[in-house]
Length: 281
Image (cartoon, rainbow, N blue to C red; front, side, top):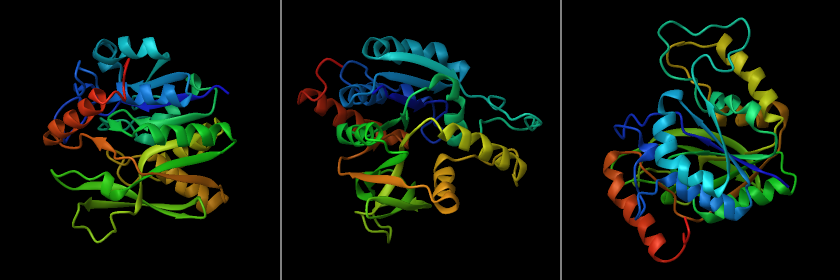
């Protein structure tokens, strides 16, 4: 079965202080995304769709695209405030940023024709998570999630926000966003959390279109409100009774939330390369 990897890469890293999606991490300048695509290909995904801003297309292709296009069939789509805007709506005059992760996935609608995984460009998920999602999609899962243990997703350089997952009998019951989390938080370190690694069939696009229009109608702050993908999944569970298969990866997640995270992530990924986990990347 054909499957697609959809990568959300349009956001600029405000806390990181730049375009963290293309910061070099590997021994030869590889970025986090190189590792994710490598793991996805090994898991069985055979197409990648990158959601980016048109303004970063040249840099993205130069730093990442040329290597990645050798590994997998690749397509680019663009996310801007007016992309996939429903009829009858317009962009508020002071709106500068796109509409969030739910909108990002909607922007890929015309490029995705198979079951797909959705990930963040600047997160390292590890091999097992891609295998879990791919196997679930090819086994018929409508929606699935690869969650991680909270303690495996924290940084030493500040607090983080995480979607805390309630999982029972292999099904996701809810995702609740928690902010300002660190190793001293009262939430147990083995609690599963979402790092935005989802699996979907293509009928999610119709749900996103409907809910995006509702979101636009009911905004309280048109300049800042965002249409988040986990909120859509949570609504589908609660209002539609949608079953979301949930899996927990015990791999360590790596990401650059803050600029000071960079040396530790570089060291971890370069060590994995030295150990032979990414031969031929």
